[in-house]
Image 1: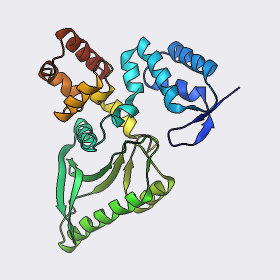
Image 2 (image 1 turned 90 degrees about the vertical axis):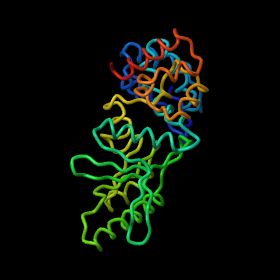
Image 3 (image 1 turned 90 degrees about the horizontal axis):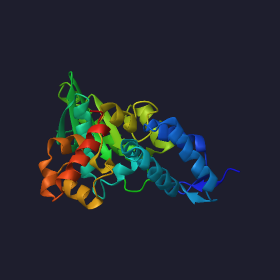
Length: 276
């Protein structure tokens, strides 16, 4: 009989084994492996189990079969390991846009009609310019709400008003609100109506943050399963936030005192995860 589970935002829903299996296979798990994990969890799940505990059990079983698949499966939680500061997430998103062919300037200051605005990410590509406001949350259950969308729209309006007053071409063609979690329904409705682009963990339905990370093959170092948490933190403090960066800078691993055999294994996992 299906059991009720408690999600990270505190809401309660019926456990759906097909969703678990879909997420495992989307991460690269073979169908027989995903099916075995689903059946194992369905057979032992207790009423009102927390979704985080279900995730941990599935992750451990998947890691035993395939570490790269486990790393992809843990991607959302890997982004939470960037905290508590939002700066590493900003650096990661900047690298993601660079991987997509954008020229990125971090934390650029743009003069508006009334005040100047520091934007978290400013990117150009093929004559297009975008400015992004990033909102990083440590709580998986937190959703970026309409108040944040209103704030971003006000800043963009001030930037566009300055361009209009001086009869210059706007320095920002597209305004983005980007988060590592989800958006409330009102935030989505307002952004859609007012012309703000939203990018979150599962929004939009296609081309969301997860989709773009996987398409670019650019993964956070926190997704690697062979690096200890303390080591990840030291690397982040050195502004190393992606698997690609660690592959280009193996000296950083040596400087942490990691033995050669572990370095080789870490680089191999990073290479497999990045698809090369």
